[in-house]
Image (cartoon, rainbow, N blue to C red; front, top):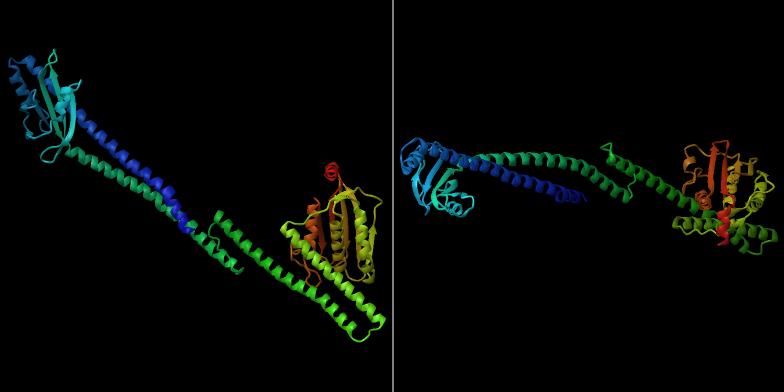
Length: 475
């Protein structure tokens, strides 16, 4: 992955930057060359204009012949140290050459040929002469009024100094581009490294977590998105560690919960199988076996419900029901147990409440689970109170007890799967998680308030049957 990030950056972004820089170099080089060569062209054109002006003045001020005046002007050409002036005949042969510049016998004369055919009667040429020196030539053809050839002037200048200036300018351009590229690439690579280093650590840490090392933590290097990711992974590791601990506690708790009734069933079965037990022992043994079997069945159903919730396969059989009837059934089932444990029920049953849309078996299961918890955590002589009220199209079933209560630090997680605040009391630790999910499926909620050593209050809320619910039932 690390190599992938660097490679992706090199291919996508650095390659584009380099391509743009190369475009600047080649484009800039072309522009510099065009600029300097343009100056040389203007110098040759200006030299030709000045020569024509001098030649015209000499012709008007002296009595010399045309050839003598031309020869004098060519020899006295003011730019002869930098520019060679040649006078050409119709065949392109040199008839006069300015002093100060060595004549070239095998110079390319293509500009003369172009000027002879050009409507403007002018042409430029750039190339190397026999000595290897690069030059620029400018040829101007003069014609009479009838268009016949009269004379041609050819101005030639060296490009060596100009090419040196162009080369120097290009080197400056390349150096500038390299500096700019370095100023972009080096900080970018350093920045990428600041990302890759914590990413490498995050990857290594996540692998250790995946292998079961939940104690490992990521060092937070930066207070940014990477830092937030490090915090998230550290939090994830803590949550996984807590979940793993709860899972182990759950397995241990379930194993213990299963072992207890199985031991009782096995013990009484062995007792009843020895000899011929008297009717009292037989009845007591059968009673224990039935009771423990029901306990096992309840635990298995609870586990199956939890599995269905985890897999999203819990299906509710929705119908218009009387919530009080299901609550009465749950109270009736547990009233005898409360009496045997010397705990008091205080149930204030309202005269009537609105019907609800729900699964009666699942809602009864929720009531039984909450009341069962209240009985488990309430000491002998304690009180379990049940109240029902209807408010704002919601029915609230409030079940309170005077038990041991829940510690403040345990309360936020009491509905988490596998979580048990009090590990000394029997139970799998998933009953509240199942009950909470059932209420969520009913568009209701399950809220818990508790004070340690004072008691716990559980409020079960469910919406009353409305017009939309009736339409669902009809369909």
